[in-house]
Image (cartoon, rainbow over all chains, first blue to last red; front, side, top):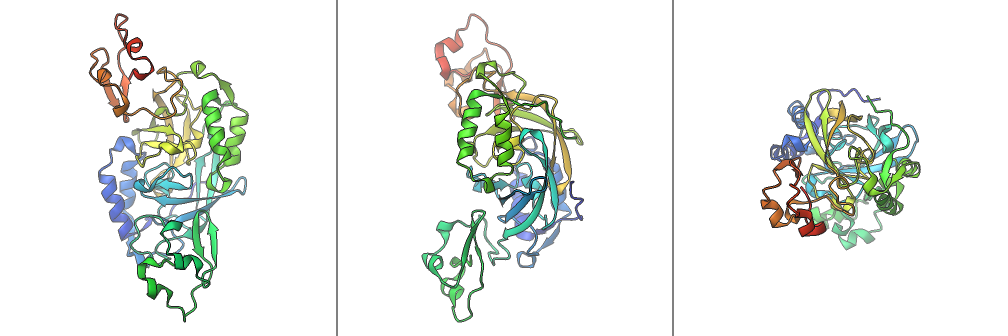
Length: 190
Length: 190
């Protein structure tokens, strides 16, 4: 079951600019479907980062998938090529399957070949982390635990849950704690 | 069109050992179809590296694909996770699609989602480089241009053609040139 997508896809203006700049430098022999990706960018609906729906996959989003045939779950974080580091839970925007992810929504399904060449149907079940939703409107790389301020790691107002390699917010900060004001952009709410 | 594979797949004993060792350390939530990959390894036909058919995808092989719908060609080199470097022409054995590649043969087809989520049918058209075929029976990483000896770069007996990021041999060495004997394992025939 391959999703029949509602054309056009939705992209943030920031993601679009960055992807197009990288794409221009890439030889077509190095990318499966470079022309098709360019065509998708050309016809995308473009929104400001702060206007992006929270249920849509954007760059540096961490997406939880389930394999329809087995019910097994796994996560992938969609990154720019420079942020690929060999970990199995990151996928490049220019890799097979990766180029299909921007603009996908919860519930969308994709088919891709699993081990042995057998087709797997894979459903988007959750956007575990989306930079725009987290207020990270200018982030160009996925967050790492080590980038978080020590104070945030200990803050009792954040009940943290490690899921798919990223720390996600479970409870909003109480109003009397000017946490983000104290740390500004550095104090990511995770 | 998803290939109905002839079970079991064919793997070299060296690739099998390395993949299994890496797989054991990987959490299942980080890999799409970890159990399925393990199952494929368990039932694979295992051959010594020097016995591998030249038309089969092995680790560090560079594979040329064509998109059936458009006729466009591109190449991917199947690597271990540590050899991922952000270039779009490498794919990890633990990445989507990558885990489907070992054991594929020329003519095999796979379906995977391209930009915008549209299904692409992708056919293996050539094994541009296969370590076992090149006599690189113990290589654990794909070759780089900079790893080649200077003498090999200038050797008139090798007409080089840069294809898909690797240099491939166009003509066999003449018998009177003891090229590999002079350089031993270092003198990769490319």
